Amino acid sequence: MHLSQSPSPGHRWLQLLSACLTALLIPLCFTGPAVVLPSISQALGGTPVELNWILNGYILAYGSVIMVSGSLTDLYGPRRVWLLGLTGFCAATFAIPYMPTTGWIDILRLMQGTGGAAAFAAAMSSLAPLFHGVARTRAFSLLGTTFGIGLSFGPLASGWMVQAAGWEWVFLATGGVGVLGAIMVAVSVRPAPGAAQGRLDWPGAISFTGALGLFTYGMLLAPEAGWTDAHVIGALLTSALLSGVFVRVERRAARPMLDLSLFRDARFVGVQVLAASPAFLFIVLIAVLPGRFIGIDGYSALAAGQLMIGLAAPLLVVPFIAAMLTRWASPGALSCAGLLAVAAGLVWLARVLAGEGGALWQPMSLIGIGIGLPWGLMDAMAVSVVERERVGMATGIFNTVRVSADGVAIAVVGALLATLINARVAAVLADASDQNLLQAANRAALGQLAEAAALLPAAQDLLRQAYQHAFGQVLYALAALSVLLAALVYALLGKSAAVAARPAPAGTTNVS
Image: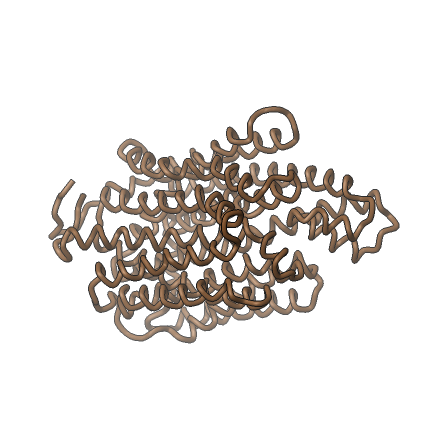
């Protein structure tokens, strides 16, 4: 691989391993709570809103601050931001099992997401100067594989820990990974000044974080409170206002947090489209399938975790294969092919879940293979379409789009699922109150069938049928979206040269 002459090769690979451990925290913080949510509900109670925000709070905080974290990394260097992020992350993670209510867990999940965003933005930025050309693609494909490990075995490990030791150990084990990562960062990453000059664009940072945070909050709250709720409307309108303020500030700033001229580059826009794609086509399945398997289909937490391996296991190997295939095809073309495979897998999964025959692992594996093709390529593309001094900004934008899309996708799919369930049940139970129907539909959308049936006596079979029908419709809609995204990605990226072909700068050494 092409590596820069400083630091030493041993420190470079240890730094890459440190980045992989940091990257592993993201799927662990997502898949673990998704599997143990029923156990937390049994232990601590909590309303549907509080339980939802155990997942949503992390996504909201992570997506809202990651671009600011990228800018801070550009200014102050990756080591400082990386260690501070991991310290905050570990402190919040270790405290979660000792909280008396789900409301306190929600607050700590916000802190956990903030620390995780800072750590991951610094980890991404730190790798860009170390690897170039083919080496960069391979290094970032290793990050994609690390995500795959977390997504593949996170649900299984979480389910096992719930049965063997209790839900608390899901968070304690994640905190342990964070501590190990912090020790490795302290050893492998040397103090270095930031690549950018000046100060943080505070007006831009505040307006951007406020706009994105309020938009994500409004989208996540809408399925629970309704689109006409004053808090939802207020959050979305204020978000739109702050977005206008942000654009105005960035156009006038001497050193903007976000250089809006980047969006004139079709390749840069294409990378952002690609970044958002897994949220709607893969991450939502990670979020909703455990609830379905446990609450609707009657599987245990451990069995649900085993089923999820079929969806995410391909990410263990496919990103590496995709990196090798860039010798013959562009990353954009490979990504397009992967999205088309995802569309086929979603249609197949809808039919299997509807009882048309076949094993669940087959369509789930096809979805995993399809999403694995762009998964290991898009991180390298994100840092390869900009100059070195704007790598932190580019990775911040990329991860902001990727993680913010997760929150929006989960909110949109949850709202669609609840709306379809509500419409189908309301057509049969015309005498039921609107409030009971809405609450029952939201409970059913979370997979909490027994709780939903308690709100609508003698309607459990109807709720189950409504859920299964709605779930199939959602999968078909996601398949259509996947085809549209494939066409858009090919138009923006499909004919561009492979990222791996970009030459390394002078002063690098070929060690591969």
